[in-house]
Image 1 (cartoon, one colour):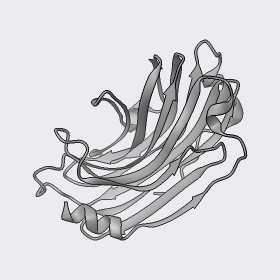
Image 2 (tube, one colour):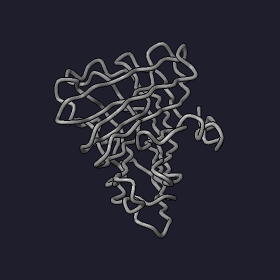
Image 3 (cartoon, rainbow, N blue to C red):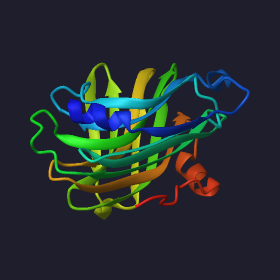
Length: 224
């Protein structure tokens, strides 16, 4: 879409990576293959088109960090980021944040939502528990979202400020997965913000939620 391409051209981004150990080599059976941040429009019937991955980190290490922001008069403004905090004893911890101010886009026939968010790709040979803890701030047209991509199917969860604090868990068997989370706004335009923490832990590795709370990783609101 022309408007999405124009917004992508306005990106200002920074990438920092750190760490000395390959994330998939802790013996847990989980291997992280990519982290991404991006934004744009999504057509529910053709979810692969209309948006861009602004930053991509292959084989991310604990300490990896992606952060992108953009603005364009035909789109609005967005910011999104993700940090790989740690990966110990079969528990990987991430923090994420996203803010989106979208102008109305009802004249675009193949755009159902505008979004800003992040994505994690990983492969696991063992069952895992995915635990998300977050907070949503939004106008009536804005939501936070969590998406699981597997076998070309999309299974999404949407959250409003009334769901705070957002706590969501999902068990996954061995396989390859993409997890996406961020803020989305409907065609009338408006504001959405979603931030929080994500744990991916080997089952029956205990205490993913307790680890998140004890580590104090629940992200503070960074932007309006």
